[in-house]
Image (cartoon, rainbow, N blue to C red):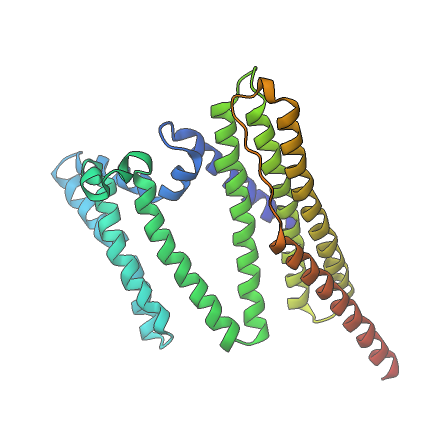
Length: 306
């Protein structure tokens, strides 16, 4: 994907996440994101249903069509003889959508369905159930592609996954952290600003790291060992190191600044985390960068020999 198109798409997605996070007055940004787009679809269907008899019929038709979309996708895969065991989750997703969308249209029944959870999670609890099934389905599809697919197909799957990771970082920054900051910010309390900086700076570095991972996959897809792939691998390793350092330094700075400004803070959140996953990812990126560079040198030697 072209650089400009990618960042434009991420910018528009971030603006939508920010608007969605700020619009949830009663709920937090994370809850609003989890309920999206099911809550908005439910509101639209409810408005359509209350508009009159014709609108009510249209609302029921759209409700059934949207709920059965996973089954339609399953039917397409069956016809093309591509259905696998994990596709059974599509039936579960359709059943959940029938319940979730109905309750989104009629939210008065949420307390009876969810009990006390309806008060603090509300519609996000329902959205989370559908997203859990879809994420599980995606992971199982990725697992099958890794075990049975060829390297080119696996590379395409990984590239899509990196784009999803980038979107997740943007959603975390714009849909969760910024709305939480705007709701909690006050001139006399520095805690929201410290929390925002401690979360956003590592996310920005991680977002740039994911972009260079995507660039490396694009280069490897075009040619196994090229000069661009070597450069992208080196930049990926460098950004991995920066992202890891940013996460560690931001955590340290967050804790020390809280101690320094403790008299002016209304709340404190001291924590110590060992970023083992980041260290493993950094080492893997460094190893990959060196393997790509070594492969590029061997390919150049073979070309000269031939």
